[in-house]
Length: 462
Image (cartoon, rainbow, N blue to C red; front, side, top):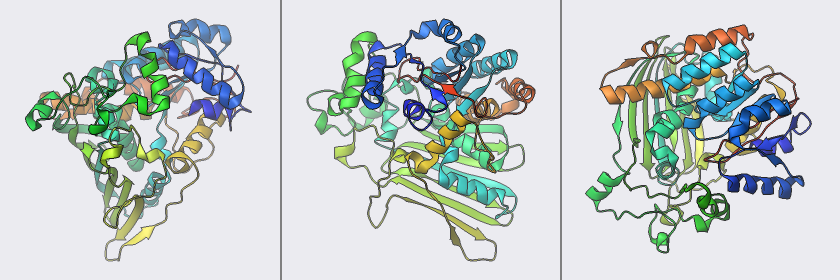
């Protein structure tokens, strides 16, 4: 995504300097992509040399697209080296790491931007506008249900995400998107979290209970008979990125979702109290037969309902393909359930009516393009305040980190009792003039993304 943005629509203000990844095969793959697509050869460096590279090249911004548990070290190193940082969500996976990032940002005076592209999705912006315009009065509660299907949801149980120390579990890795949406929709901060859930479908104990045969990996001769198997040979891109590069680091992209060693949950439910009074009821399921989400926002003057179906059904032949349906425009389904979206407003004493959602071109309803424009050209006037900074990034993971603590203790956890570095982050943003996003409005930008297991780094302007 970043490569295409820098070498495409934002080439007049951005320069792709170099790529870095712990796996040299994946760096070479993306170097080939750049050369074949844009006709130029981009450089590379060892992620262990990040500080030296940033300083020697005069890098202004580093883009981090690596596994979640590596974010904190890379973010802090880039800040210390003198660069601003763009980091994929989630900001990090633990309270200690979050506090360390906040301290480093405050001490160095550099900026951290967290990319929450769901804010830019037209349907989510439409809901924000309706709440912000007071169409249902003061918000009292939100009921938010997200279901991941047996294509997309299963994929988190094949990869590095399956180990909780790596990803923070789905409450941090995936749900930070959703908690950020609620924080942003409400313009409020989470105060107390109670969570329940567990690993109830994937994993070895559940496989044994249901008589499911467990395999070492998905790339095998009989994979076509297993809807949960991901055969890396069936997709040229996955083959080149992962299967062909296993010799470098031993990483297997196609682990069995029913194997031993999975420590994350696949069924989760939370109750979250917000400082301003609203209560969030949230649930996540990672083995649904369809994918999408439903949000109901109750207010003193009515109710808003956003229904989204991103994939209406998963058929056996599609089972192993690791595809996030929100990225694609795929209008399929039956008369019972079809892909689509609908935002309904019903005020007290009135009939319900549908509010318009205006989609743009490109991924996530055109939202990704808006996000990238904010990153590389600086945010313009935005009545919905979609650009997200360090404070937003911390508040998004606050619910998941406190939710994990609640799962462990069986008790509700107050956000204020967990040191996430929030006050230090607020102070750092205030000292920087309150900017929530894109470093240097209108500044040139240079960047280096990476791949799934590497130190995918990048940066803007000299």
